[in-house]
Length: 279
Image 1 (cartoon, rainbow, N blue to C red):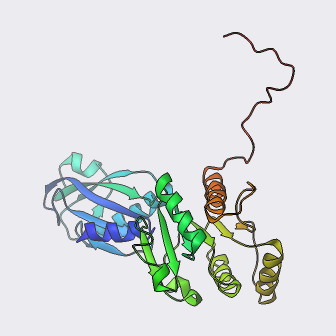
Image 2 (tube, rainbow, N blue to C red; image 1 turned 180 degrees about the horizontal axis):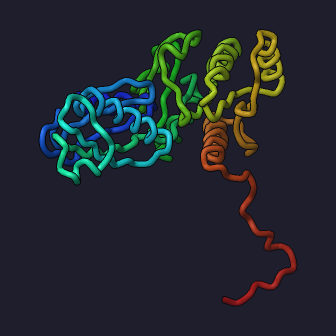
Image 3 (spheres, one colour; image 1 turned 135 degrees about the vertical axis):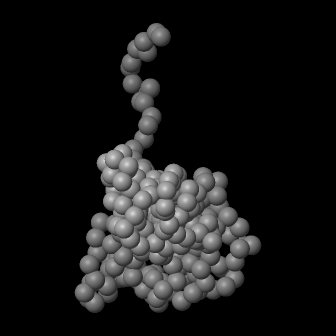
C-alpha cells in the first residue's frame, strides 16, 4: 500500500511526493480520492490513472520535490484515447471527455543525524538526539552496538559492513553524517565513501589533527578529493573530555551547520564601565 511506501522512504530519508485526485468529472481512469506516491529515485506506488496523465503527474511530482512547494493542476481529455492536457480551456468549452484535478504535496524528510559507530560517544550522541528531537540513524557492523535496546529512539539501525555503505543505507541532502567507529581504518573507509556522495551536507569525524592528516593523505593518495564538508576534529571547542561532553560538542556543531549559525558567545561584557539605560 502506498502509505507503507511513504513510511519506508521517509524513515530512510528519501524525499517523495504524494499525488491525490481532489476532483474528477466525466470519464476518467481514476476517481476523486485516488493516490500515487513517487520518490526521488523514480519509484512509485499507487496510481492516478496510468498513461499520459500519470506521466505528467510524475514530472510535476519531481518539480514539487525539487522546489519544496505544493502543486495543483487540472487535466482535461477530449475522450479520444490517452491524450490529457493540463488546460482549463477545453473543459470550459464543454468538449472534454473527462477532467480531473490533482494536488501534489512534497514530503521532504527532516534533517537527520547519521551516526557511524555505536560506541560510547555514539551512544551519548543518540541520547542527546532524543532529548533534542533530532531524528537519527545508527550504522555499525557489530550487532550488539546496533541494538534497539541500546538506541531505542533511533529511526533505524543498520548492522552491515563498513566497506559498502551505499548498498545498505540511503543518504540524502538532509543526512548529516558523523564518523566515530572503533578503528581508524574503519573511519577512513567510511570517510572515503561519504566524500563520493556529494549531496551529503556535513561529514564530521572524531579524532585528532594528526589522525586526520594520515587518513586524508591516504584518501588523497588514492585520488580522493577532500572538500569543505569535512569537519575534523569534530565538534565545537568546549573543553570536551567525557563521552557526554564530546557528544554535546558534536551535536552543537551539527545544529550550527544545519541552521547556518555563527559560533560565538551571546554574552554582553557587563564588567565594562557602562551605564545601563532605564526601560
